[in-house]
Length: 286
Image (cartoon, rainbow, N blue to C red; front, side):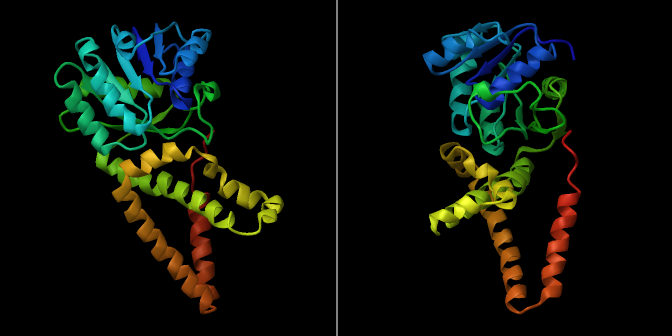
């Protein structure tokens, strides 16, 4: 894709900071402008070589933007989109990095009306760490990025967002917003709940046990170190789909419990084998 005239990133955390670094390294934008909520963060960002300017307000940051990436937590994406709407140039494109898309895609489009275009996106990248300081230019390499246009979305705006994420190294998958929420409820939100509740359960046991944790427990629960308030917002936004996924997982766990209680080790092994086969078919990340 041709380099964007101006890329604006609002509220950069880990993902937003990584977008800026990747865009600079891959020459995806001629000019990169950031805005952060805290004055001290804005001052620190002004010292970074991968951005050209740091604005004091969101409205100032988007004034000449070709593409705006709203990198705020999911509960703040729509309020921030509404705030910047009057200041956007006509025809500008707004996207996001939120891990829930249904309401965000619909409300984002409504907030911009006919002045600009909102095209939702969700890069499946990140870690348990937060903050732009932990950003990496290669964070999106070979990672899936969902792009979730609405039926009425402008095709050219959709293509711009798709091309942008590809330019950052991501493998783009275009799906409907509601389908996206069903997918991530199973492959992202459910694993987070399982890891966190497993640690919550173990925290009620002898505290000395944690000192003996091997690689299995550490690997299984790495994401339990994620920000609880961030995940509260995600789970609140995707509550219905996560509840459906939890109910289905409870059924699977219950069937495993029955097989073990009945000493049906053929069934136990069959379930373990099915799990291993699924895990072995993950595509390499790099």
